[in-house]
Each structure stands twice: as structure tokens, then as C-alpha cells.
Image (cartoon, rainbow over all chains, first blue to last red; front, side):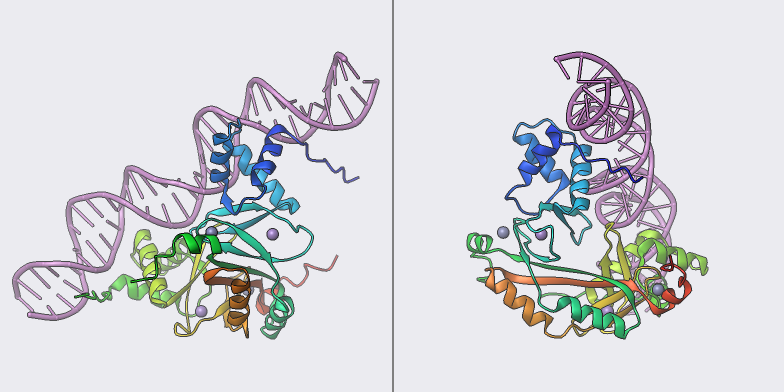
Length: 140
Length: 140
DNA sequence: TGGAGGGTGATAATCATTGTCAAACTGGAG
DNA sequence: CTCCAGTTTGACAATGATTATCACCCTCCA
Ligand SMILES: [Mn+2]
Ligand SMILES: [Mn+2]
Ligand SMILES: [Zn+2]
Ligand SMILES: [Zn+2]
């Protein structure tokens, strides 16, 4: 009954996946710019839609910045639940696991009578590369 | 040298603080609606500015929803670092402490060469009251 | 009490994201 | 290989939360 319509692989979607490879967290508009600078012909709306589809299927991770902008990057471990340590300067990120976090949050939620609990955890810092480059910041 | 200009207490700011008391996380526009419905005369821009000022001074907590909207609520413990367990239905929230979180995240960040690390942690569920009210949901 | 400077608010401007819809494309059937 | 039913695309308009304007209003201290 439930006809599953398989997503089609188009030139645009392939270009997006290629662009995402190896990169950090970037906004949809940033990715669009990169694609265009690399000569690709692709519309902004398509980039938004594709990234959102990939996010739903688990192929890309998303984070929402403090200013409300959504950032995307290709996920290397779509299967397992994990979190991210991201560079606030260049967007680079690594998948991380926080031991016992799930059980701890579940216990806390239960203690307060909350059900159906989900959590958001993001670590934001400055990656090793960016720390080197801007080394003269914390001198004065 | 550094002349500190003390924030002035105005009718509007007092009204906002009063409105916030005892309430959960709400958007600036929601708070503005509440204020107006209660007969207060206050502009939307003022609500935005005031909430942001209070947030900077630590008197108000903020969270950014998945859709990018910023929610505000009065904070009961401006002094100590803490996180929130929030109801996705009514906005009610409790301040929570996650033991050892700081040290764990610091260690993970250091292992990956990241510096100047900050973290975001939010628990979102359904509070006890809302769970009761909509109790017939998970039956089928 | 006077007034300098912060605060207010109606309104316009931003800007990321979503909606529209005709035209182009993909993938399977024949 | 060809054909066609859906999908997908993209230029452009629309949305909606938030921010900038700027003339006018208040607060607070001397
Ligand atoms: Mn990931
Ligand atoms: Mn709080
Ligand atoms: Zn970096
Ligand atoms: Zn609730």
C-alpha cells in the first residue's frame, strides 16, 4: 500500500553531495555560493530543498546557530546517535560521543515527570588549525 | 574611565519582568501579545530590546528552537551555570544540573585540540501536566 | 527642577527561508 | 530505444522573525 517513492539522483544533488564532502558546517547559502564558484549551475531553492531532504534521510547533520541560521554538513555516521564538536571559526567538526549522556538525561527528565524527552547537545570551540592561525589574540 | 551607564527602570521594563514571572519559555512576540492582552501599552521593538538586555545581564534565559525562533523566560538562578528541561507543548521549564558535564566536555574538546570551548545543552519533552491532558495520544 | 542621554514605538528595512508554478529531467515500462 | 508519469528544478514572489530608523518621551542625578 505505502508506495515508497525513491529519491532521484540528479546532477544538482550529486553536485551538492560532492561539495559537502570533507567540508565543515556551512549554511545553505554558503554551500550555494561554493557550488557556483566551482562552476556549478544550481538554484538556491534546490540547495535548500536538497539539504533538507538529506538531513531527513540522515545523510547530513544540521545545527542551528544562536542567530537562528541552520548549518549543514555531511554526516559520517548516519547510523549511530552522536553529537558534534564544531569550530566557531571555520565550521570544521568532529563526531563525538558523550558517555552516559542518554541515561543521565533520561533520569533527570523522569525525576521531573517529563516524558517523550529529546536532547540537543553541541560543543562549540576553536579547532587546532584556527587556534594556531589566530594565536596572537589572547596576548594583551 | 569606563563609565558604566546603569540601565533605567521604565514602566515597560517593569511590565515585562512582571509578565515573565512564573511563565515558561515564550517568543518575544508571544510576550508582547500577553502584555497587550493584559492591557499594557508597549511596542514590539521594546519587548525585543528589553528581553535581549535582560538576557545579556543574565536575568532572562534564551533558547533557540529548531525553526530558529528565540524563546525567553525569566531565570531563577542567574548566578550559576545550568541547563533547562523544557516542555515542547507549553514552554514550562525547570533549571537542571547535569553532573560532570563541564569536565566531560572539556576533556573531549581537549582531546581533539579544540580550545575556548562552550556548550549548548537543552532537554525537550512533555511536562507532567501536558502529558495528563493529552493522555489519549499513544493508545493505538 | 533642568536637561543630558538613555528609552520608546510606529514603521521601514533585513534577510534567511519557504511558496509558486511552468518547464526540464529521471527512471522504469513497453 | 522511446515514451511518459511523476519528480525535480529555478527564477521570483512571499513570509515572518528580527533589526534599524529617528523623532519624541522619560528617568535620574546634580
Ligand atoms: Mn555527524
Ligand atoms: Mn534558568
Ligand atoms: Zn577552525
Ligand atoms: Zn507542558
